[in-house]
Image 1: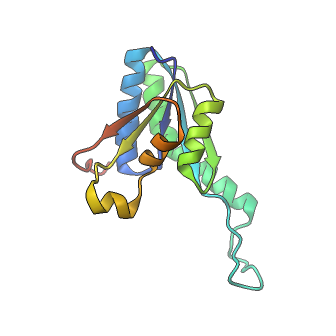
Image 2: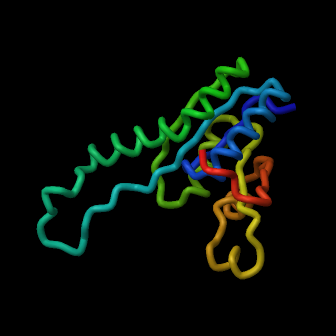
Length: 155
């Protein structure tokens, strides 16, 4: 039914747990996996007249975010390799992770977006916002939400 599944991660324990569930789902479907990490755009310091020497350059920031993305997506890659699934990884940059997730799913021809939810409700969800809810609002692709009832144990 699904040929290419986008699995998102932000490096948190919740997203790592969700990613493992996403790979298992992809294995059941015999689908290709695209792992995605969305990093915030580089921000120039606007509160000082001179950029401090310790402040990373845009190139250093991008390289650091790509390394983080590779680290965060490493578990997905290892799971896909172990399951014999075709896979690829992408680090994208945007200040709106939800919009970038929806755009990447469209541009890369994904049939499904697989992502997690903390399972917050009420005021917590309203005050904190939810990338998952924003993705649901901005995409026409199906979104499978893997909801965690309890926080996973630290790895």
